[in-house]
Length: 409
Ligand SMILES: [Fe+2]
View 1 (cartoon, rainbow, N blue to C red):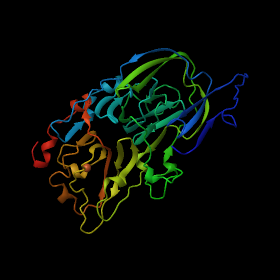
View 2 (view 1 turned 90 degrees about the horizontal axis):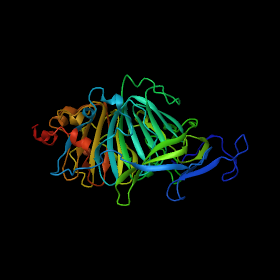
View 3 (view 1 turned 45 degrees about the horizontal axis):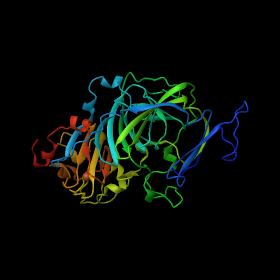
């Protein structure tokens, strides 16, 4: 995030004495990327941010994966992973179920009603798409209100806590989480996640052709302050062999002790409703729908839009063999035209792997002719390495999707 923000109590000059009202010093911490050579922020703590009193292993869930072999396109029904009211006892961090993953990115899903533990992901940035519900993400930078359609971008190693429930604010007390779950589609990178470089000027400002801009990005509000001793924080990180592992730290004092911060690295939200679709006379390729990029993958979204307006246009996509990618679509609103007849609906994921040519289901091309508007909402992750199925992906697999183009189920 190249856009500078400043909140709370900071000294006029960086790396200088910053004193509390009682005359003692605040503790300055730089949080920065790429070894002091990229974006960073300076945070001012009342306690020493390094002061841990214990460390123990923590098991961050079942992250084992199974190869997609024999190679098959798949339909995964994510809502089936949290039947009935199971979500009421689940939190948005420890309740995640791994759907798909490779060495560069993991996609998981959770429907939650409980407040999460304090947590940070030291393996990479997280992009959490809120499918439904609302809540608050409290972070060391301040609180982010979140709602359906938000992408929540949490930079690597941002200590935070999820609180499902509308109107939960900064209090740490859940609001109306008893009525509906907070449904999160979680994209965890082993890298950073950012707006596509081609949308930005060489100094980082959004260019005129970008489908969104700075006004659409919402950073944290005022700092969240809590006190306490012996405070647990779950840390997800990588082993030297590239495995995802976890550690539970116990901090001497509460990490939410920041009195002010400034810089260009912080969590933020972007709502999919603020994405301005790019349309054309004939079909536009998925890169016009791109919203973010990470190491080894891109994120695109297909939003309600006017469709192709050439008099002989075919509004649904042509069949495509995207030879360098596995393509993962999460259907989260409206009615996805090209997939009618496949059983896909809200909460579905389709996996179209490299090596298999895919496109509209039988009859979809003909039905789309003459259409002027598609009321559809989908989030797509394209990876540049093959994906494997997590335990959640295997559990949600409908089993018959691969044969739907041939008219069989
Ligand atoms: Fe596709």
